[in-house]
Length: 48
Ligand SMILES: [Zn+2]
Image (cartoon, rainbow, N blue to C red; front, side, top):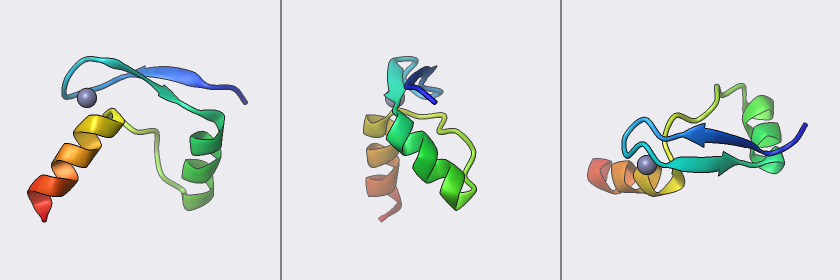
């Protein structure tokens, strides 16, 4: 496994999905993230 670069669905910016994160997501059974950390954070704050 190695770091992969994904494009954020919300802002269109490229972000790195690191090896460690991929492992974490796989362990949890999550699918790959579609948003960058900033947009994920923004959404989280909106929901709270
Ligand atoms: Zn984004």
